[in-house]
Image (cartoon, rainbow, N blue to C red; front, top):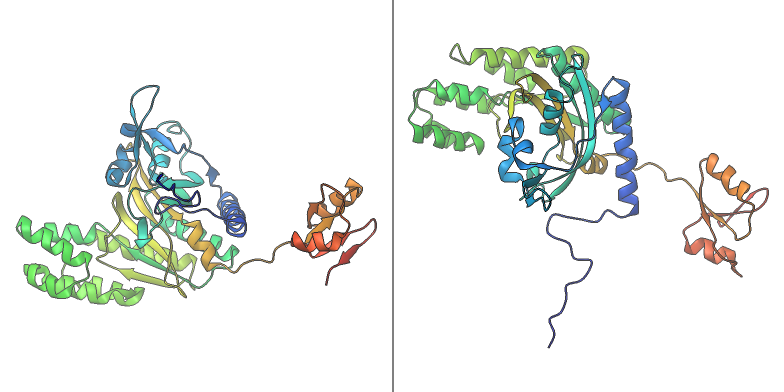
Amino acid sequence: MSEQLPSPALLPSGFVDRLPLDAQAEASGTETLLSVFASHGYERVAPPLLEFEDTLLGGAGAVLADQTFRLMDPDTRRMMALRPDITPQIARIAATRLHAAPRPLRLSYAGQSVIAGNGSAGQNERQIGQAGIELIGPDSVEADAEVVGIAAEALACLGVTAVSFDVTMPPLAPSLIEQAGLSGAAKTALMHALDRKDATAVAAYGGPIADTLIALLSAAGPADQALEALNAADLPSVTRPFSNRLKASVDAIRARLPGLQLTVDPVEFRGWKYHTGVCVTVYALESGEELGRGGRYLCNDNEPACGLTFRPDAVFRAAPRGKLPERVYIPFGTDFHVAKALREAGYVTVAALEPHRHPEEEARRLTCSSIASADRLISLG
């Protein structure tokens, strides 16, 4: 008995076909995001999907090695890698091809990335769309606030207004732990406990900073509550600047967007592998799904930068679906000027490629709602 071949519709785990409605929504929505980015002076760049491994995984990309698919270039015999994230490529471009460009350097991008293993934010996708901005040069709260403000504006343009921006400072907890004089094993156990938000384990492994960490864990939530607890915490002098910067960035975001829902998690650091300062995650309030994330990092030449990357598929799940243009059936032999005028008026035209005895039936089969004649549209009811 011959071995049965798998169905041609079967795809590897984590990869999907996007069919017409979803593909069109993602394409048009991505263009809306990029249009908002461009209106604020962010110029689009398009790095390649594949790079040499040692280039892609250098600088900010080094921490992404375990998320990266690799293959050999048949021409050079060098190892190449599929990007799992576009941001490190922007960092490379800023440090090389655009190193002499005036700062602040504002760049935007959109494209696909491929992740080995599960995707970010607990998703199962391994091919993910990304669209975002990077602001390179200034290390200031005003830059942090600009990125958040543009992200909120872009979402609003897509009708996504029920959102929450969760702000954190990933270096804060590691800095606090480093100053506590704990053993290596205790440090590791404590980091795992914080990662799981396990207050009991934090109490067991936290030693002299257990009470402080538990208080900060408990304070996560509305920005005022969290910042008040952070201000009251007994932090060492090397850690306090992280706390101060977190508060200053939140204040700058509020000054720009006083009505934006802001939460703060003082000790969150999960998933922020190459980030060095204030970070932000955007959530849809109704579904709780992560729509995007970003923050402060260093480019390949240690130049300060900050940015935010959206997951377009998640954003468009949260966005209201726009009304699709009306589809008009164009009978065979219709003057092409009629169809052209309809397209210019915003209709979608579907032309017959041969005569049909019953054009109404053919129009309905092709999901058209009306048929074009020389001087009017005939509704199919």
